[in-house]
Length: 113
Image (cartoon, rainbow, N blue to C red; front, side):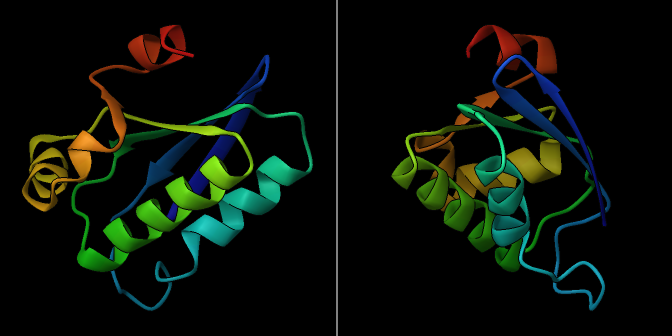
């Protein structure tokens, strides 16, 4: 799994490439990794772009929810975008789609900040 990060104003946009699963190389702590990025800057919102993600496991969902809680504790907002149907369905089945801000496109996600 790869993360590509860019910043627009006070928004950190992170594009994820690869599946969020328990695979040995991709099973690092996504939440800790992203939180370390945001603590070094004046970020108010993190957008995770899932356009490069085909699948997400319960491990990946757990990491996203951990990130959501940690960002909220620091007064930041988490937005997800560009989820394919499989990934979106996983969030819907778990009910987390009701807790998280999810948008079809990155443009819509940026407009919501």
